[in-house]
Amino acid sequence: MNGPQDLGGQMGFGPVAPEQDEPYFHGEWEKRALGVTISAGAMGAWTIDESRHMRESLHPADYYASSYYEIWIKALERLLVRHQFVTDEELAKGEVLSPAATPKRVLKAENVAAVLAKGAPCDRPVKGAPRFKAGDRVRTKNFHPAGHTRLPRYARGKPGVVEAVREGFVFPDSNAHGGGEQPQHVYTVVFDAGEIWGEGADPTLTVSIDAWESYLEPA
Amino acid sequence: MAARVRALETILVRKGLVDPAAIDAIVETYETKVGPRNGAKVVAKAWSDPSFAEWLRRDATAAIASLGYSGRQGEHMQAVFNTADTHNLVVCTLCSCYPWSVLGLPPVWYKAPPYRSRAVIDPRGVLEEFGLTLPSDTKIRVWDSTAELRYLVVPMRPPGTEGWDEERLSELVTRDSMIGTGLALEPAA
Image (cartoon, rainbow over all chains, first blue to last red; front, side, top):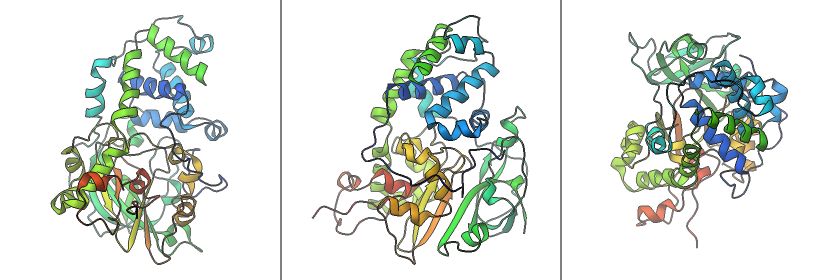
C-alpha cells in the first residue's frame, strides 16, 4: 500500500540527528515492548508480513508521530484483537474480561535462547528456474496495490540491472493477507540514481532493492 | 506509552499467552549477548583471514554462523565490502530491517523517517550528518533492505594496523562502519 511506511525519497523530516552513545533502550517500557512483541509473535498466529502490514496500516499522522516501539505496540494491539487474543474493551480497561483464542505455542524463558538463535528462515524451494539472470536488464512494474507490497514507490516502473539471483523467498504480498507463502525467486536489482531521481541526481549513486520475480519484467 | 505497554503485558500474562520471564530473557539477550561486537569480530576476521573474507563474500550466512552468530533477523546475510572506489550504505526505507544477529537492535535514527527517507536520495547529505565526507568521485551504493536479506558492510581496514591481531582490530570496527554511516576507526596515535 502507498502508506506512511514508504519513505524512500520523501522530504521534510529534517536531519538524521544520530545520538552519541545511544543506549539500547530509552526507558524500561521499550524493553517490555520488545519482549512482548517477540513473545506474542512466537504464538504463531500471524506472519512477519502480516505484522509489517499492520504497522504500515496505522494512520499516517499516527505513524509519523510515533517512535518505532510505539508503532510496534499499536500494531501489536490490532493483531491481538484481530486474532481474538484480546478485545478492544480489555485494552481500554486494562483487565481480562474474556478467554483468549488458543495459541499454537507460548514462548517460555527456557526456550528464548533457542528460538532467537534459530530465527525464522523464509527461504523456500521455488518450482521452475529463475526467469532472470545476473546482468539482465529489467524494468520494475508500476502498480499500486491496496495491500502489502515490498516494492517501494520510488522504484516502481524503473529500468535497472539484475546484479544477483538470490534464493526463493516467501512472497510478502500474498503472505501478509492469508494468501499463503507462494514463494518466488528474489533478485538484487540495481538502479542508477538518475533513473530514479532524474534531474539533479547524484551521478555517483546507485541504489539497489531486493525484488520478487513478479515485480519485474524484461526491459 | 509506559502504562499502555504495562497493561498489555499484564493482560497477556494473565491469559497465559506471554511469559514475563521470557521477556526478561529476550531483553537480556539484546543487552548483553547480541550486539555490534559480534559484527566487529566478523569484520576483524575478514580483514585478517583472506579465506574467511572470500567465504563471507560468497556465503555470508554460513561464514558468520561459523563464529556463532545466527538467528533472528540474520537468517539470510549478505556482506558488502567497501573498496577504495565504492562506499556501501544500508537502509530499510519500508520498515526497520537490520542484521540483528551481528549488530543487535537498530538505533533509533535507523528506524526513523529522516534516515529512511533520505538515505536513498541524498546519501552524501546523510553521511555529512554523521561527520563523514566522502571524496566527490567515490561511488556510493545504497542497499535498500526490501526483502529478507540482511546486509553487513565490511569497512576498509585502516592503514597502520599491520600485524594487529583480530581482537585488537575488532576494537576499530564501529557499529556505524558496518551500516555504512561511518568508517572504521584509525589507530590511536
